[in-house]
Amino acid sequence: MSKLSGKVAVVTGASKGIGTEIARALAEAGASVVVNYASSREGADQIVAAIGAAGGKAVAVQGDVSKKAGAAAIIDKAISTFGRLDIVVNNSGVYEFAGIEDITEEHFHRLFDINVLGTLLVTQAASPHLQAGSSIINISSVVSRITPPNSAVYTGTKGAVDAITGSLAKELGPRQIRVNAINPGLIKTEGTQTASVIGSEMEQAIIAQTPLGRTGEVKDIGPLAVFLASEDSRWLTGETLIASGGLR
Image (cartoon, rainbow, N blue to C red; front, side, top):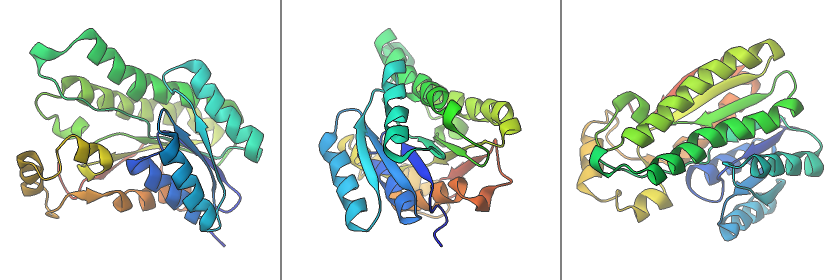
C-alpha cells in the first residue's frame, strides 16, 4: 500500500521547479494533489496530465497566495474536488537579490507578501479542514542559515518561514497536526537557470562550499516531502530539514 494512499495534498507554486517535483512525488506515493499556480497554467496542466498518465489524481487551480481570497480558493478546490485535506505544502515563493542600497518598498513587500504572508494565509485557510495526523510542510531555504550578502530581504523571508514553522508546530501540535520545513540549498530549476545562476561563477562558488560537491536537483527534494507528509515522520514537528548537500 502506498504511503499516502487516500490522502489529499495541496502544493502551492507547483507549476514548475521544486513544487512540480513535490506534487509528482506525493502523487506517486498515493496522494491526490491540488496543483496550485499563480500564472503558469500551462505548467500546471502539464504536471496534472503527467500525474494522470501515471495513474494518479490531480487538479490544477489558480490562486494568488498573497491574497486571502486566493488562498481560500485553493483550499476550497481541494475540498470540493476530493472531499478532504491532509497535506499542505507551502512552496510558493519568489527570490530577488538586492544590496542594501537597492532595496525598495516594492521589492520588500513583493517578497514578504508571497513568501511569508502567503504561507500564513494558505495555512489559515487550510487549518479548519485538517484533522489529527495532517502535515504542513513549508519550503524555506538554507539562506536562513548561511545569510549570503545582497539577500537581506529574501533571507529575511526565509528566516521568517523558519520561525513561523516553529511557532505553528506548537500552536497546532495539540490538534496532532505536524508542521515542518525543508530548507533546500541551490537547486537546478527553471528559475535558477533563467536567473543565470546555473553555469555561473556563483554556482561554482556554492559547489566549492558544498561537501557533496554538486548543485541540487528537484528530485532531491520530492522524497523529503513524502517523508514529512507520511507516518514515517509522525514524531517530527517544528523541524527544519536542511537539504543542501552539507552546505552550511
